[in-house]
Image (cartoon, rainbow, N blue to C red; front, side, top):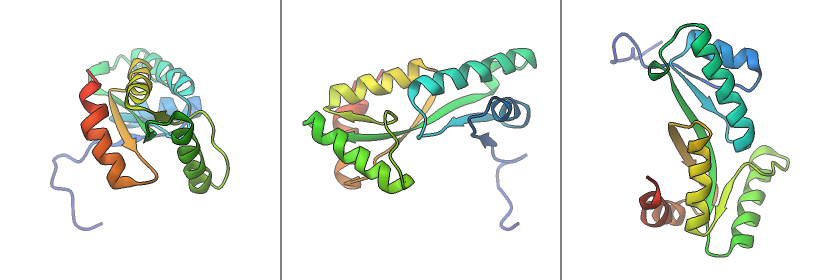
Length: 149
């Protein structure tokens, strides 16, 4: 494979998955676990618990293994419109409805939703708007990210 990675010995390996065996494999073989955007925060919290149990079982320092989650997000001052827009985009993206996995609404609601993801165990959160990318990035940068601690 070319070009070879510059980072030595190699870039960190992040592994996703949802089955408990895949989560344990992520700990055995990887440097981090990346939770899917198509999973609810509650399901992600269950996955984090399995990952942490496996880190302990293997005697691995939790600080040596990162945990992240993709979050589909849509900021809109009208909560119903925000919900409808992200749910429609998810249905197009996945080819079916995927309810309860996104964070949407006014900035305060988005901040709260992202804080829940962090409380569930995410040390890194990938914000993934699916519509109006430029506007969403502007709103995230100006109205949501400053509200996160």
